[in-house]
Length: 439
Image 1 (tube, one colour):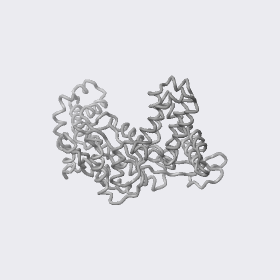
Image 2 (image 1 turned 45 degrees about the vertical axis):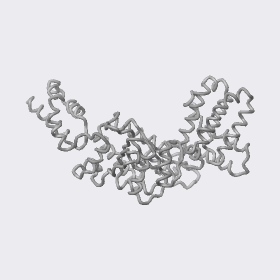
Image 3 (image 1 turned 30 degrees about the vertical axis):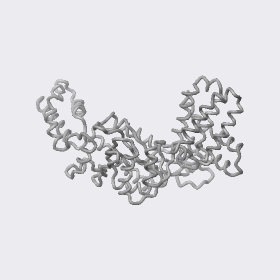
Image 4 (image 1 turned 120 degrees about the horizontal axis):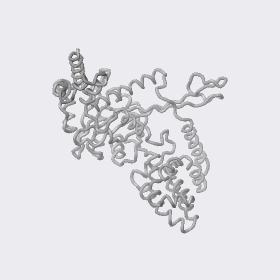
């Protein structure tokens, strides 16, 4: 009886090794052993004994681990390995192709045909790279992702203090706003380099399959190579991330002015906070806004101005005069001021994959799972369901506040006092970023 149970467990282990849902041999053995209460029987199920049979079983389902992204591309192009990149429902495939940059770099692009269709209809794209989850394959430097965001606003009607069924917002009395921002992952790219040439090759491959597209804005984290590539390939505007800009400015102040100075001299901290609010100004007013801040700093006295002047110089040279940051700094009037959609997607991928540098075939199955979740979410949206929680009321109120002070700024004749007044009111939107970056 004991031997029968051990043989049954071995058979289950070998069958799991044969499954297209890739798991490491150790994880398979552990999962089976945990269901056996008798430790004497568990002791018979060792990796040393079972590895040969598991390797033979897996060899019929998976190819040998590729040694490079080029080798991986050759495997995925082989029709006999079509199942490796098949979607979970078997109706599509996430493998698009390899993209070769003019610098010799190879990138592997994953996007299903149905995600391409969603991409064609998107108004705004978010792009970013992440490193933690790069699969364990030689030369793979980063995972580059492109996501979209579905935004929807509802009015929540109240009757006798009881919330009723959400409906489209009509601004009626006795209602409050519910808003969702649903992150929609669409494209995943394994890249050997994060060079402009590599990004151009990837985007050219996407463009060839898209043929037509609607998006006119891409939001990223001020990475020159990404910005230049999107402008060159798609001819779209690229906006930077308000959070990254404000964080970088505040961090520079922390390092170069010092926490003690910023703590003991609140007037200097106020100058730093005003600088962090500059991206909220319209693009054509940012330079003028910095000049206004400079005059305010001069009025603090020679000692304070001497202290803060290097920081103002940094804002001018590293941001306003920068060929990419300068033209992409303003987030005024944008529905999305940050690249939080990409950051949220990166965190979700890290949480679900759950390991640093996963096996490449396990990684591809996770991509298929992400693609499947995207399609499920789109079905939920089309049926009128709400697939995610709504945004915090504080975020909606902050959006409304920034929109209000921006309208007030642009409603009358512009002068230095109005610009300074705007910045003073806008710093409340940067307080959390500044505090976390400095203290």
